[in-house]
Length: 444
Ligand SMILES: *Cc1c(COP(=O)(O)O)cnc(C)c1O
Ligand code: SF4
Image (cartoon, rainbow, N blue to C red; front, top):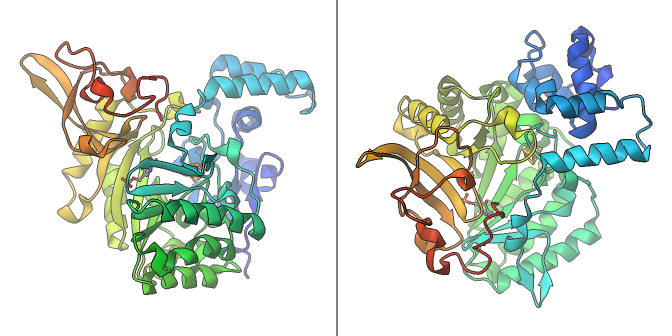
């Protein structure tokens, strides 16, 4: 291996070894030290050497995605941590203060509990089954990431174990559940990043699904950030060949291998390495679909999306989703109001050809389902948002337009009110979403 493709991680404990860090201003370093105590971060040599433009710090989008910045905490929180920097991290007062700030930032998305399936009375914690056709599976070996995106709050679950025995026990539960659920056509492996697990571990989950028993499973989906943050995963990592071989096996068994790649910015699509990795994945017959949240300071301009979708299609990828950023973590830093998100989406969508218009959005993954803002309109003097479910707990409700009062500042579904003086949205009536649907605090 050469120096470039040997993985090297940088976190709060060693980021000062990055040569370019020396050129940062003392304010930027302070921000990393302070915010980094609350929001863990992780970068690697590929991100540092090939994606970040170090002449544009702190505003470079990839720097902002991977390194903490001052504005990610409120001034009060920032000052509080700054004043405690000298304390020993094991000091209980320090720990309690950090935990309190974290709790403030992360209104625990407890709604996830509603999607955890059961088998013979046991909760299957590594799974979510929210939409009829698709089961999400979180291999416990994939609960870490190649980088921790600063907008993401999955880090509490990042543990990174790689134990084959444990994997086969988990795999067994997944397989038994799927045998009892013939309505499921897709299994989506997600995380963290499932591709931080070895190809061996992934095979333990995936290969059994290629047998006759699982004829109802048509598509194996893998959601991963590895293409953008560590494309060597598919080229030169120790088990890159085994991973590619696994993808080929899925295709040979007559199933789709749908790779859901997270790209947040065109910079991630511009290196030679990512292009080679995309080619290699596609050479197995896998399809690559792309998704990204719309993030202020990262990709909040229609030109960026036009560029991103066009580059993706040039490279043979299929634009799939534009998401609204979740209401967790440093949301205030990254959030874009729904109205602006729709304007931006429409602007970008109208400027690309039909081959890019496979993309859907802007979409909120909210408690009742994935809801897109399809437009803003005036109906009989009332300005409204037109909304629609792309996915819903109750599949019968998909694709039915519904209306909310226009609100220029709203950033999430739970801030919207039904239009036309209705008391509730159509899906809130008659228990259409099933049990627990009246708990409006659980928007996940
Ligand atoms: C997004 C999502 C899926 C997959 O939805 P598709 O529209 O099929 O890509 C499945 N389960 C959950 C919980 C999701 O949020
Ligand atoms: S789960 Fe996705 S968004 Fe979160 S840190 Fe990992 S790659 Fe980033």
